[in-house]
Each structure stands twice: as C-alpha cells, then as structure tokens.
Length: 186
Image (cartoon, rainbow, N blue to C red; front, side, top):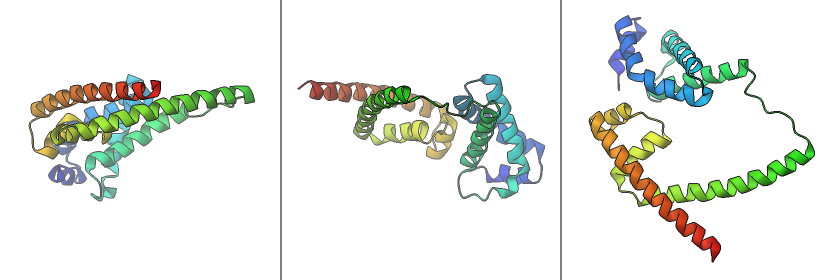
C-alpha cells in the first residue's frame, strides 16, 4: 500500500520515516494502550516499536500488510513492558478459590457465548457495506484511515458508515439478546 515509502525508509530516508510514523502512530498507540492501559507506557512501547521496525525493515517481506507487521512489533514491545513490571503472571490460588472461580468462569463463559452469538447473528443481518467496515475495524483492528485506503473511500465516509453500522449492530444485538433471554424463560 505504501511501498514507495517503505522502500525509501529502507534507504534511511528520514522524511519517509516521518510519513510512515504519521500514517500508523495513532493505530499503533491504540494497540499498545489496550495492552498496557497506561498512556505514557503505551507511548514508550510505540516509540520503541517504530525504532525497531525502522532498524529491521529489511526483514519485512510483504507477506502481510506493513500495518500488521508493525502491529506485531508493537504488541511484543507492549508485552515486554508488562513482563518487566511482572504484571504478566498469574498468581496461585487455593482449592476453594479455584472452585469458586471455575464456577464463576463457567457462568461468565455461558454469558459471553450468548453475547458472542448475538453479535455474530447481528453481524450476519447487517448489509454488506456495514458488515465489512465493522469487521475491518472491530475484528481486524484497522483504523478508519486504513479502512478508507482499503475500500477506496474517504476518511469521513468511513467514519459515517462506521457510526451507522455500529448503531445498527447495537440495535440488532439488543433484539437478539432479548430473543435469547425470552427463550431461557420459556
């Protein structure tokens, strides 16, 4: 998609690096923030990821999109920060806590399955132009600018379609959830 910029970055062109950064920093920051839940740490992870990406650009083969390749680096940098803080471990529990947690987890999983089913059914009901934008944004993790480029639409067009699609999806999810709850009561 931005092969000319990537090629220029491989030649250590600072202007191209700035352009790549400007294209991807928002999405990469959001990815890091979802993992770290801390603004400054997300910013640090994102910056380190960009530096590493520019150093290792020769290893980018183009098998996946540049954004996906960069996102993988951002995720790894974010996880490294969590590991250093020792927040990426799971504490031991005694037997009673485990039994309670297993039961709670089963109930949560059942509820989650019902919600996922409602969302999946609701997505299937949406017109394809809504379903595609929601899938690219919510499932694939693309930002609105990337979706605009993929679908050859304007940024504002993608934003409007996304908002309409999201509202329609929520309406459908509520309807499916209501039907599910009614089926449990019968």
